[in-house]
Length: 112
Image (cartoon, rainbow, N blue to C red; front, top):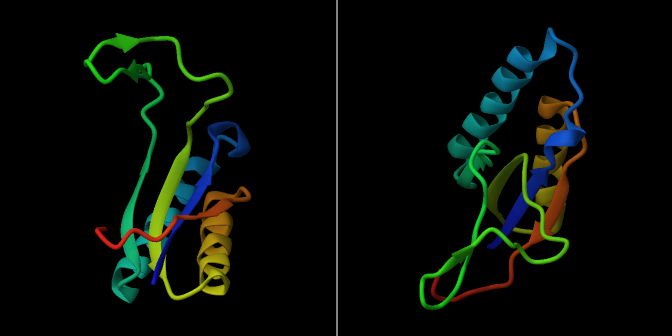
């Protein structure tokens, strides 16, 4: 089985004032279904109130990130049999979150 990252940037989620609560319930229902199906690995949202840092091999930190790097919004990692199944789960999250999702495949790592 392959692990897939399903994600969206914060700015993609354009909701009316009445929608966030329902979108939250709907997305949690999709996550619950993924857990019940045994395909859930991890999910969450990036805490945008905490600034990211770049960490060097010696432990030094810097606020200067890699050019073009940007990670915000929400994401889920599912372990699925194939890309078609990943597209189905991404579509379910897109409907729940009311925004399109990006789908990426992790390289196989025998140690994970």
